[in-house]
Length: 108
Image (cartoon, rainbow, N blue to C red; front, side):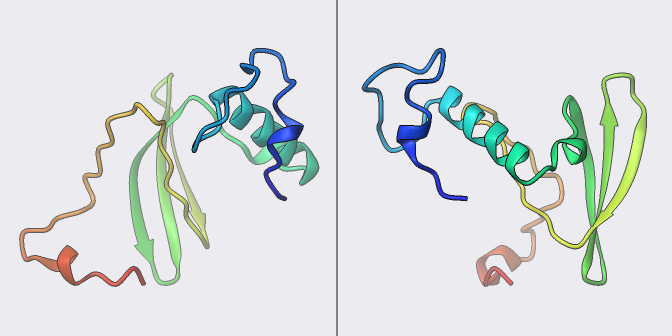
């Protein structure tokens, strides 16, 4: 599903002529909305939910979440992508580099 900036520059709120290295947040918003509609995955998207823990179980990932009402949930996935906002200060309590293991991590 290719990113084509010309598909998003005329959307409401997107600044005309503003294209740098990163898309404007409204361009990204319209792209993600179009992507979700194209692949019919809107029912799988969960918003306003905080990930409180991620653990590995064999080849799967178990994701523990909490919503605004403090309701917790646990879901197992076969893949995981971690993303955060451009101005968000990330916190990853799962990484411990006390033994220098991050320096040897190859990405696998």
